[in-house]
Length: 315
Ligand code: SF4
Image (tube, rainbow, N blue to C red; front, side, top):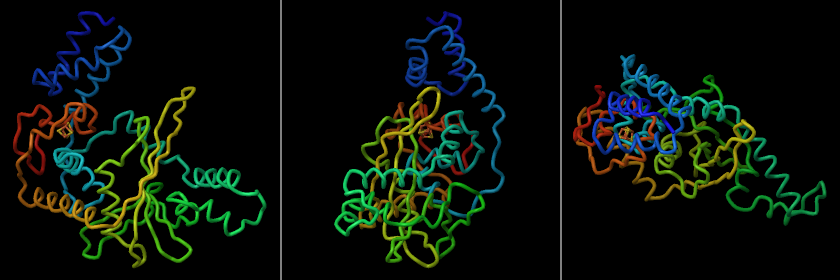
């Protein structure tokens, strides 16, 4: 069990980090202290101290991007405050985020798809070298079939050297993770997401907005995308190594409902950037969401006491 001194120190640090209301403080405190040992409490104290250091050495962005980006729209869809914070400050990556990014870079989608093809071939065909049309139909069945029967022609996330795409009016700029081409020349995008959540049953709204921004806003060599995919993988630690499992694939369709969702977010982002001050709906706050949010350190809205959101954000 953590010592009394450790408990007091943790409580004090949380208040200095902006967990100032009783409700927010108690929620964060409980998360750290429930079942805490002396070792885990001292590890958490180290983490809180380095958070405090980061907060004190915060760096403001001097130049604001004139562009809109699919990731920015997704950030707004997640939380407007987080959008404003990330546009205004350099947010250092957490250890978890750094590990996640590295894993994202290293993960080999081609290998994953090749293994899936081999598995389907073994299960569903006679294993002859030459596949009959009926066998091909079985292997290329369903949404994964669209991926298996198409070719990757662009990878956006693996290198900064890959060119970004601009919308026709030049306002939106972005790099989808992957662009695929089918044998008939039609194209689609795929966004790969890695998460600690054990299984993703439903795509996240913010991720949907990101993919919708690609498929409605951008083109590849003048070709429009007819749909997008979101492919989730869940991490877990196996023998101290990060492994992925529970792949879940979701289709992001071009339809009225999705278009309207994208337009709504785009209009709201424009409003925030133009007016530089909008009202913030405090009833939208969820403690569980705030506590995991990558902007929480710089966020003054998490207490639920601020009803106005400014752009740029001021701490
Ligand atoms: S901590 Fe909460 S209110 Fe603040 S940016 Fe994150 S989700 Fe939004």
